[in-house]
Length: 249
Image: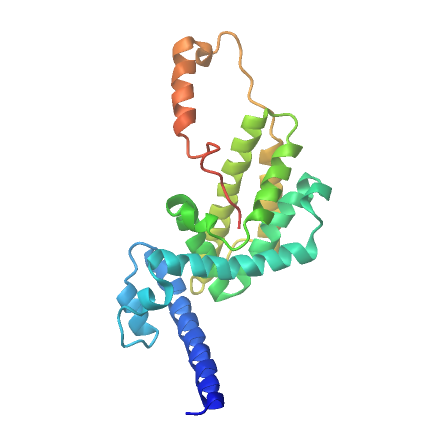
């Protein structure tokens, strides 16, 4: 075989490999969305993707976690393209613009079946597989937006601002997943259209971020030394602590 023939075969093999990986990812999205990341059978995914080798997922992605990370990265790149193309730098945005820069690019995923599967999978990743979120190809835009949001909450302490942004980020992820499930059902008729749903979600997130800081009175039971000690223990183990940063889609 000549050098040119070998080069042609190499290019064809690479193209075939990319197509195989994409078929596996397409099938896996549906299985992960319907059955759950941990419950879905990798061998069934490989078979449905047309692979005789039931270990095709491990061959192409290394592991279940590698497959999940690749699916997340594919959709995250698309979301980042929308975000970078349509919104100013976080430092130049007010709070509402920051919220819109989070919700609106992710909401585009409601428009396609693959995107809806991604939105359904995302809460599983955020809640149970956060390491896959942190393996995103370029997490810096998300972190910059989160930091800018927290900085705008000047009525809160830095600690409360960080906790609130993390909690509301989780709420937005779950709300989009619920919407995607409704949209994925046959003959389902949502009470409001997507445009109204997205605008309402933006305003709910904005309202929650701007809610007043909690007040403590001297007589508050939480002011007692025992309560404060318990509170410190809870805070150190909280899923919203600074050691477990919430990422956004």
